[in-house]
Image 1 (cartoon, helix red, strand yellow):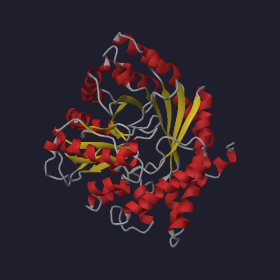
Image 2 (tube, one colour):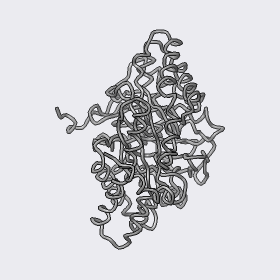
Image 3 (spheres, one colour):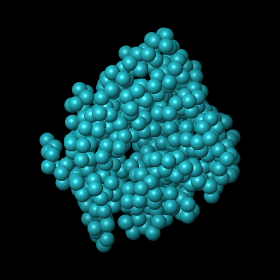
Image 4 (cartoon, helix red, strand yellow):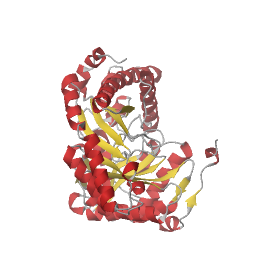
Length: 450
């Protein structure tokens, strides 16, 4: 059992090192809302979210007061809307129902405007994909994701090609806000069904009707722990990180289980992911620099990140039998003060970030590129990232913003947790003929395990 005393031991982490519960995410299955009438489907979705999620914010605020632990976001993730709306075709109506319910109950974001097309897609799913720019540009709180690849299925290159056009269109529709719509859309390989973090959260088909998933974050806590051992060897440093991750996980599980109990739902998983913010002292990059790197992105960065990610996972697994989601280290450029600094200095490049994604959680996250970047180049970046995930049997993703009217050297300001994104350069050589081939890149031979 997790005791309150264990939470009290984290007071210093909370007050000085930015430890927080990054999100309480209520997972809701919507299969019982399916009908052939798009208005009826949208109404049922709205009613269910308001009925089961109506107390999420108040429960989170009460727990934060009682335990003294900041709970930054309260969110909901639902069954992929491509499935829920297939019978009625009312995708935009469903997006608006999601947004309306999110505003009604006061949550920060609602995820699940999503599709799973890792092997192929039918006409209904293609219609859904084409609805994404309008859906995400006309709503405020709705987030979406598209799974275009997996180790088992390979890479659906037709979907990859389409996503390049969709991302460009979404950026254009939200141009007055720097293309912020693209910050609400993730393209996945090996998508995770119980991930509580936005923008990629959705409730997978293997999940139940309702569960509470919690995401914990503490880059500042880990940085402080590493800083206390300036001359330690890596084996010692790994143990320090594991023990720190253990403490963070225990705190998160107590909050998560209490939230689930008060909401009357099952406790799902605890995702121990080091998710940074633009605040100084809350940076994954700073942890890596405490390892001895002058700047994140220089030689040695991938090795340092691999050790950090592994130690965090081991510490979490030691602390809880409910670890899930992604649980590792995130490297969203615009949301990490150290990453922003290194990208501005030209040390951290997209190519280096791609290498780093082979050893950490998720992938190329919150990357801003010039607004005139061709759709085929964006698709090729997605394909490269999917290849890393497919071959290494891990989750990878791309959240990329072709910022309208911006070029290398500029910045785009999103505000809040989304931060400031320096515009990063992409290769000028064309990938258009490569993307136009279409079809499917077959699954690797090691995928055939049964």
